[in-house]
Amino acid sequence: MPERKPRKDAVNNRKLVLAAADALFARRARPQEVTMDSIAAEAGVGKGTLFRAFGDRTGLLRAVYQARLEPIMLCVASGSGPWGPEVPARERIPALLDALLCFKLDNRSLMLALEEADSASLYLSAQYGQWHDLLRGLLAQLPGTIDSAFTAHALLAAVRADLVEHLASEEDFSREDLREQLAVFIRTVLSARTAV
Image (cartoon, rainbow, N blue to C red; front, top):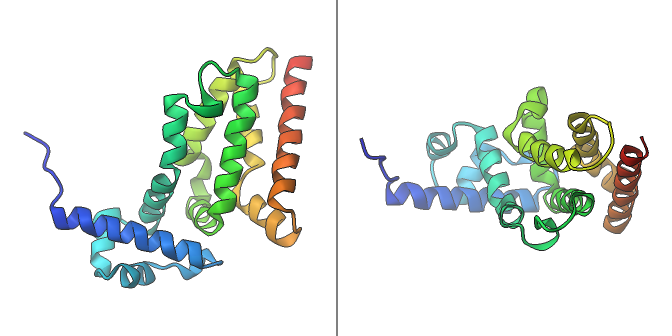
């Protein structure tokens, strides 16, 4: 049986909803303020449209995240920029984590909401698994005996949205300071791998 194409109005409504959610997360400092009701109102659609298209708030958050992250993941997949296959893993790892940190800084409210929604199973979520698998594969290319899976978890912990938010809001780290501190941390971890 051929796969049914979504109706034109459903495709249009999905775009409206994603744009509305994107705009609300950009404007609101607290992720709890962005509700299904507020997104539906901003998009000019009924709340039922959101549930039909995304299932629930977490499904909608994941869709917004994927839409925002798509340009980065296309670069990673195509191997362009600092992520190219000809670039050594030792250089690709810091570039990927820096991109993830900057993404979380630029999308703080959304990322807090998404990590909060996935808090019971953040480490089992698709978005976490995607980054973990990528880092684990790169770490496995480096010499050393430290477990690549554990090291990937430890590196990703440094860019958790709640930590990024705390450092930026409560401890007044600037974007440049956070990027530099992350780079130092990554160099330390990668140096420890090769020193063993």
